[in-house]
Image (cartoon, rainbow over all chains, first blue to last red):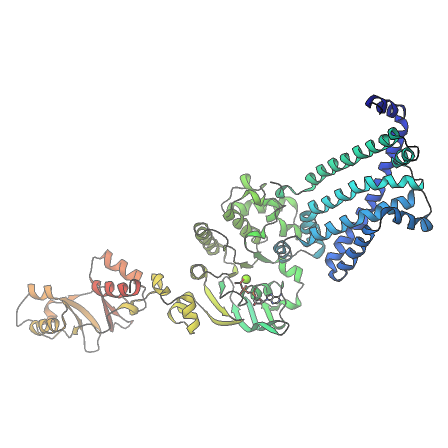
Length: 215
Length: 370
Ligand SMILES: Nc1ncnc2c1ncn2[C@@H]1O[C@H](COP(=O)(O)OP(=O)(O)OP(=O)(O)O)[C@@H](O)[C@H]1O
Ligand SMILES: [Mg+2]
């Protein structure tokens, strides 16, 4: 058994590499989650408006979620090749469901009376969405984004398998070389990253929660 | 003025509003009341088109609202709903300024108006304008609800059970405040409630509904005195009138055939009539039954002379009341002047009855206790 010191030395010798891979990791996660937000939130809004397709959209997102991640990655290679594009698409597809679902439930659970009050005061549909529904649903939507982002940090380790880099690279190389030190030097930064994302987003969640709704 | 013409609302095959006609005048506070599910809220929401009638027409100031832009229509109608009507993520100020904002008022004008309205509902702006609804009591929240509905000074205000979630004391207080506000502002208000006391307290007229129809649309007084329908009477409560003394009239409690005599009767005859009927006063009328005055047994005894006639001794210029005066006024009159008898005469002075202390006690006792 190697001592903690040996691990630390191992890691500090490769600190530049770890930083580079962490940077790649953050980049892949960020792009994928950002796209998932840009598509998932509007999609979630859309299905509250057009109720007939809500089952279908959530069903598809659920099904995608159910595909094993490694298999999904494999499916994407014939279409998108290898590298960061298929990785980002894979992470994006996984991040979509919690965002759509939370946007949808967040909006659907806004008190009917609130909507009626807004409408009764003469708000247009767009005003109602912007001034009433979205602010009231925002905490729930943010919670969805948080779940997505934390999951995405973990998923991004798979990107290394198809040459997109990220902390997964150290982990997989460590596995093939049966080198625990290398596995750990990829896994620990990935873990810290996930906890950090969770922490930062939980603060964001608090910030976006309308003041009047906080206790 | 708001007018419903043959308004029907159906959901599928069920008609929930069955062709109602009604007319609400300007500056009138009309209360919709009736059992749960009778269509009060539906009728109210058809006025700001949150619900569209299946057939029929609704006019506001002779304009068909179905031909108006619903957004514009709603911005010109105040709307107050039960407790949760305030937006929890907006401050008191933002809530009040909402319709002005939708109407693109400049910021300073909106703020000014919000402060003005806070003062109007008795909540100092400095203290409350930046608070969130969750930082207010239920009563204060409803005051803000009312202030918000008044923000752009609309002519018409719709209120759907605005006070129903409040405790009885706060509710009574807000009812009083609304009543006073209305004396000042003269809005056309449609007010939904299921509380008869509230309806009687606030309504200029009350519209009693059942199963999507209007049973009676009348002043509180007429509803109490002349319920058009067994259900109305039952709904109002048979004893209700007696709980609203201002609606109880002299004719409801007077003695219908008081003992009377013409002035030319002798004192002996008068004493005879009185002891025969067991009373101690007699009303003096002329041949046309017009009241001239009164004589009590004491008056007669103190001026006793068998040859004298009533006309020589009776008291003239007695206080009298009309049959449709309220008993509140009569009670006041009797206690202020310390009298035990008040004759009742109509406009041409014809004697209609008599109220005495003992008749009051007897009738009121029956109504309240019996
Ligand atoms: N969207 C709807 N679909 C079908 N029926 C409805 C709908 N909205 C209301 N109703 C029915 O219409 C009738 C009138 O409803 P409304 O809300 O006007 O009653 P209300 O007099 O306000 O009752 P409450 O005192 O309980 O508030 C009820 O029988 C109700 O079930
Ligand atoms: Mg109702």
